Length: 154
Image 1 (cartoon, helix red, strand yellow):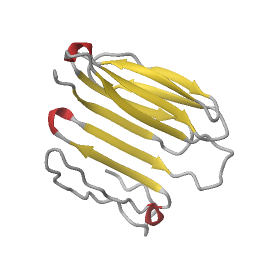
Image 2 (cartoon, one colour):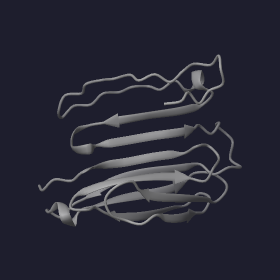
Image 3 (cartoon, rainbow, N blue to C red):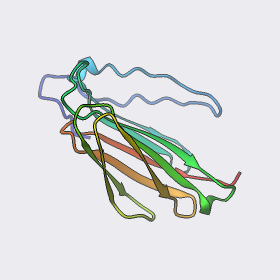
Image 4 (tube, rainbow, N blue to C red):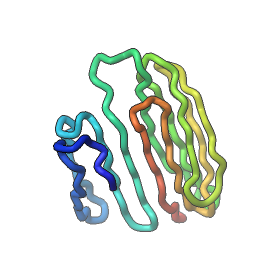
């Protein structure tokens, strides 16, 4: 990946961890060494990917949009009936456009506007239990989040 920082600033480096099943790992990203920029991914089995990238909005800066996304898998016993529910929030002071784009599998690109201080939910159907979408926000902060994986029966 290309280093998004000016010459002479710290480079992004991979920090691999192995996390055993049914456990967790905590890692703190020090954005002060990257001028507030961050870009990291988490990879797992069955195509599981979570990517988070952008630039932090400085505390107290309330004249901009502040995008926030949470994702939850919704299943009804069968993978083909599963969906990914995205909550798109704007904790800032101006409206923001979120764009959800499929990378693989089914679905059409969708743009959703969220007013300042508001939130909305978007349900993304899986393709036989598989999903891979990227969420961007038109804020000028390079906001990108990716959600990919496979839902299994159970």
